[in-house]
Image 1: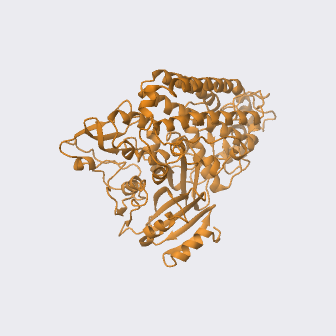
Image 2: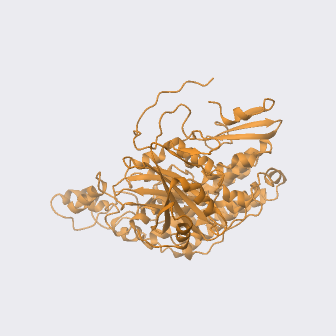
Image 3: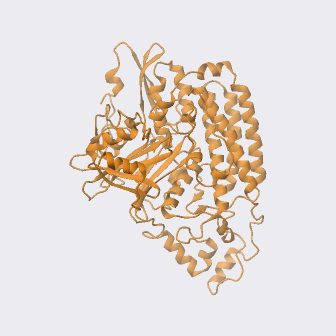
Length: 161
Length: 441
């Protein structure tokens, strides 16, 4: 990890000196670690014109079991005009697994956040329709958490009337 | 729990299910429609019928072991999935791949792209009533899969592109087969252009149906042919070139309206570009040494001799896939022994080979990328196919996430079909090229 500053990372640091905790470059990708409370502001700022990160490439979560805060949300943004990718990370604690929803900014955030809710159990505040997407109703637990066993069997659910 | 559409539907409208088992739902997906007569007022898409826990499985397999799972993501272009995963790991490890292997990779991923587009358009045309087109395209695909089968040993579950290079060299007679595939595909593309481009029935069902604006497509995270059909110039092969794509001469076809017809047309034109790429790569590929069987001992003879002393002569028959002999290794696999399994000739006849074989496959050994995280994307059949891998320094990925291009594309389906007729769902859904394995993971 080089401690190099690029234009967009410096800009982010200037704009949000309190909320941006760390910036670095990892294997050619610009990374910014931010405070989860500031997520929506930072993302709105990045989506606006001069920055122009118009595409939400990917949104996922990593479970660092045993660390505090336990979960890390990872967002990948892409700017078509400058042809650059950017990674934004924010930690979410286990006691309060809540983070702002990005659905007002990007429409594909709807399904992506449902996926993370389904597999990790993180709640997205402001999501219009937060339901499971891959697993069925009545499934217990969140399979991609590290403390969910690989071969756990769940009882069959009853036929829906 | 009632679904969203069941809660929100008006009492006088009709709720109808399309899928999960429906001939036009490639794979399994359920679309619930709220209808007023034949008009779609609202809809809801339910996915997850093919969820196999790909990401969870990968966290419990070693980097080498999980490769076959990537075949099962987009099962009509498995080689591109292999490539995406393998290149992500290579980026972490910092491996240099030999040039011949890079050319073979480009060749294979373009063949896969053609087979992906052919399958998508064949199904779409068939669902619009053009059964001839379906047969023509599936015929062309068979010729392409012949080449893939000769090279990789399998039609779909290839696992051919490996960390550090490729599994084996090309088949010595691949060239005539590939030339035949190219001529056949060209002919089929020409025929299909003639059958569909100005066909009134096809035009009525696709022109100006399910239109999406470029800004909306970007907002939905669309990539690949679907995004390019709206006129946005973005192709991972051009924007972030990998392998030898920056040396090759090809164009990126664009649409202008973003409707079903443009999505069809962009895919058709892209196949022609892929054929051009294949021809350029073929010209650059030096012909592989023709004889597979090196002059030498029979395998059983060599193993027998190796019990007492190191055999002097090479082994006559390769015990594995053709073209995976030891003397081909420098051309198709990276030279760093930590990341590639040793050749079988060494494993069976020398103690050093056997030990490096164990060191490669034993639990806790093998490929162990340094701590860190990486995102890498290739241009898949449907768009940007990205892998995000977090490594904790062990031989298993701590977290592996797939950015499936069709997840983002299908999430826009509700928006696309709103206000159209029931019959429009079929060509719209067909033109998006939903692949269950990739969508549900």
